Length: 232
Image: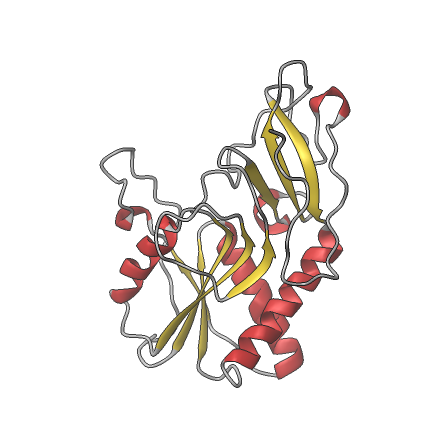
């Protein structure tokens, strides 16, 4: 069964670009030959900018302002997204929203199954007690990374509320976790690969693509070293 090439985003005006298998097995992100095929280019740089702006407005509306909000990004790309959201909120609301970074490596429930790989220092510039903490990540998958983030957050204080913002919700949850703010709801097969690229972390133009394992005889490309397939 061929994987879906469309998406069911919360914003019906946000188009999904046509699916394509790239000649020679190369994507706009420069992957080489291998066993993967690009099925759809979901968001380009302009569309992603609009997603950031929309989520920023939704956060402010949901919380009746941004004075009590703290944005905490999950390494790696969640930190970059959190900074972009803070910049957007500052532009239209005139409020400087604190931005932190959270490394959940030591809080994962699969810590006994694979080597622990810390991604960066946990840094939250304010006390989160009594504030609304918005956890920010790029791709929501099984929910296990978010569960680990909730455990890590409890060591920093007792927030009044915790909310979750993601660029892509690709389904296949294994835990009862749901995002409050979603850029794109994307039906996927479990073995699909959602690839997010941001200028700050990847040195490439912003974009999100859906890749799938190639069928026999299809040209493809190997997934990047830090793709969205394993995100949770």
